[in-house]
Image (cartoon, rainbow, N blue to C red; front, side, top):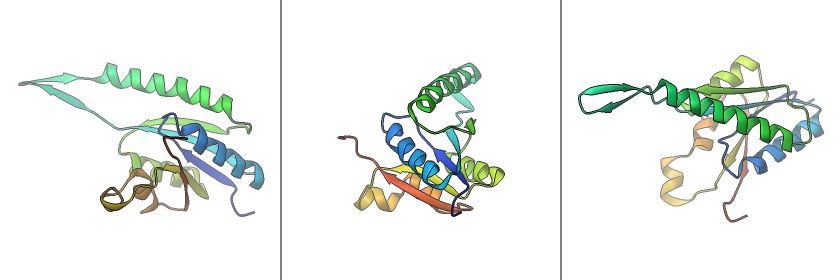
Length: 145
């Protein structure tokens, strides 16, 4: 079997369902387990003048909202999801860490197919590709669809 474990890395934007459906199709075709991850970029502390402001409550709210949105997304795809994970940190490094930790065979991410300067500067999909411990499938999504 080519892929036994698939990691779907989503950003929870409106386009996430398109990427999730592709990952679900691949999971169904391969008989593979599907794991979904969403990474919230760490904010740590915001500074208001000279006084640091603890934003732990905001980050906890972001995490709770992400879990709710992931549950909705999970209900919209037609394959069972083995596990969902909401984590915090650097997006690419967290996706790489979880892929390695879970022993996945392929990471599925969305890509907006940018060209020119945006392509040179990189994107999340490009960042995931470089340094990934396994194959990466970039699913092209367009906002106009």
